[in-house]
Length: 193
Image 1 (cartoon, helix red, strand yellow):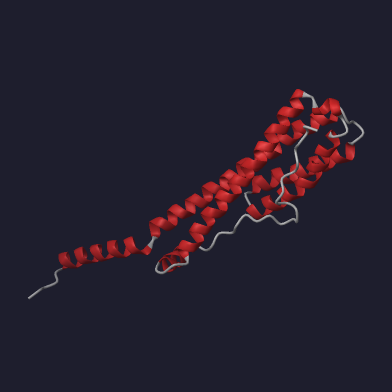
Image 2 (cartoon, rainbow, N blue to C red; image 1 turned 30 degrees about the vertical axis):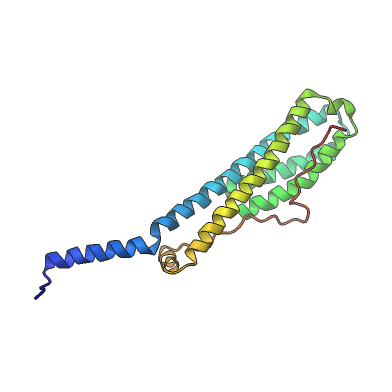
């Protein structure tokens, strides 16, 4: 006859808790959540890099095109909004501010087309290359983030992980979406003409 003593009861409870904890997905939820956070951080880093490059680009163009003050002002305002959005950490706000920067930045780069001596300026070409590289990094960071969100969201919707996620208060994470038509296109930065 099997008698359950207190010692056996606590041992049985510990084993049962371990088995339930292993199958509930707690650790995997935490891992995927951290992957999403890391990917979101990369988006912030790349958007901040973009925002930091723009003042240098504006100053370089200003030296050649002093009469284009309205474009400089628009770029500065849009850059400030992007920097503020990056500081807030709100991905939706960052996506909107990034999209709002694309149009004035495109106009700034179009100005350079009218100034052949600017296009041949070494500093300007270096900034152009850095900006182009940053646009690519933003695209990669956005893709990595959305893949991490997809993995996390799919995992917490499966049984029994859905129960663990609800207990932990873990809901689906938002994707980093581009909101403005044409925002999916990085500004054209080609001065080889």
